[in-house]
Length: 435
Image 1 (cartoon, rainbow, N blue to C red):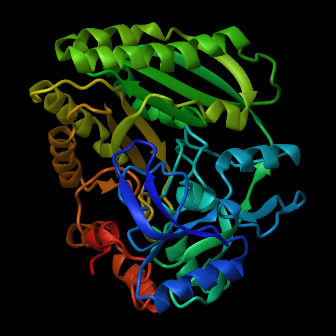
Image 2: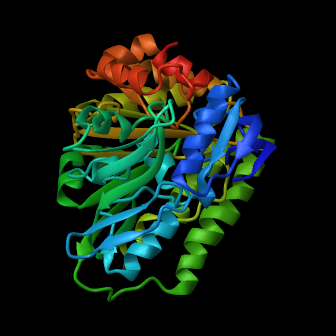
């Protein structure tokens, strides 16, 4: 275990901190030792993953835990479709590991750079009307509490901790090992097509229920969207040609789009035209591929993001208000708006607790103004009973979040028991959970 003082910033560059000490433990006991050492010195300690949260959830001005070197071993049980892995492993590494054993996660988001612990702790999700967030795949986990105790929990062991820690914000303990229920490896057929927003909203229940995974992107200042659906098929018989993958996913979606964003930032009046061109630049395509390689795509254009989980029936009203907000802003929006869907779950601080959800994510290119845009949408989403994504920008506080989550008080009781001295706190947790 190495200790250093180090500066840190997240992927988007909007969160930065310099910890008094950064440690890279290799064993669970070294994690526990690091927590006890922080307590002995009267400092807080926060675990950090890949930095793909836009909030200050991983900001540490006390001690920082980097779990990249943590090695708890890997156990794969293909017959039971269970895998136990270090929580500091990235999703990309996990996906390759599972593929080697003929397994896969049932669902994923659109990037795989996050650590497993970071993805679970913030409620990372993909899209699929019958699937919850990634934390719903967890069958057991091991964490180090604020007193340095190593605690294993599951649906049968420390059930209240299990209900809290699967989306725990790093507030109830340091996740060190996770057991996930997987499925047999599968192939997805991806269909991506441009469409009119009105037509998509008119047939929204059909779109969401007909496909295993469905989402769409609305391009501001237009009435156009890009619809993406993924469905399981028996064979990978229509792989995407390498040239087409490079053209769409690297050149158009990253290189060209980055240039368009830089141009729009320099000359904001061009933003509506850029959005209109972007809406038609990606033409229809259909292809098949290994599930994680279809779910996940490269994201090289930097942005900041807010995302809200809404009751699914509230989506049309939220989008209508969002369009009015965009039209009234004193600046321009350069990024499309993403809409996804998840099923209800029973995890206390999951955005999908107790209800089927529609997720609406708004973005802005780095270096562009965003706060008035995000705050205006947050007012709309809050009035529609929305819950902010824990890893995306928002300004909600413990008082308002307590009414949004039926099990909020139960979560705080577990947190206070496992971390009685608030060893894992930081300003973000104080904001969303209270002192």
